[in-house]
Length: 95
Image 1 (cartoon, helix red, strand yellow):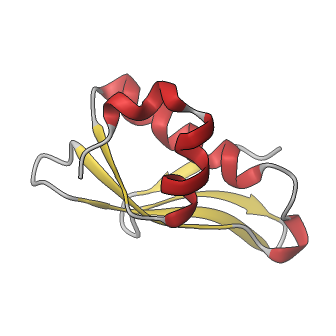
Image 2: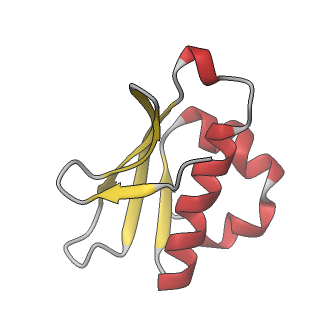
């Protein structure tokens, strides 16, 4: 599995997948950049069903946790599936 990287200019975490990529799009909610809003998660159709979305979102939460940051989950996948499975991250959530 390729390493997950962050592109500050586009505000996305991404994992190269050959000629494509999986990604988690975020935006900074506050000026201090301590609240990350997860806008969308995208995995190319040819790579779906392999747990990449879960791995990538977990990576984003772990990076935010290391920094003491909060997450605003507006992406339906994060709100409705990921946080149901990973309840240990619920304390990081802001609305």
